[in-house]
Image (cartoon, rainbow, N blue to C red; front, side, top):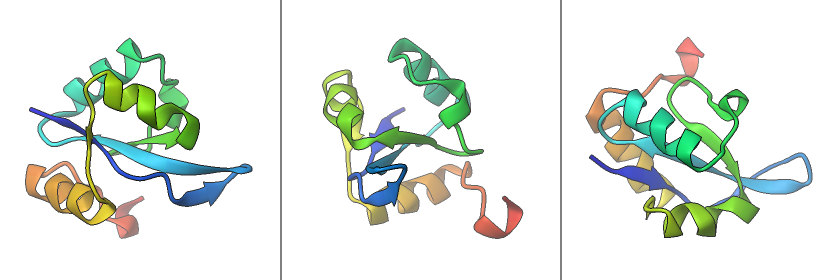
Length: 87
């Protein structure tokens, strides 16, 4: 069980955003997010959107930093990925 985070590279609202996912369960993801004070409104069906300013703190809290490509590959392999067409 691992919580993963990619590089912040998605622009919106005057910052860059990263994605935080679990490779095993949404319960694990929600627990990690709650323990690190991420608002539930930042959850988007299979991931949390995380502002660039929070990435280092989440890595320090135990999230594994991976590339965006690896994050998506591992999310798909977990069975938790929600395809864009289903959003």
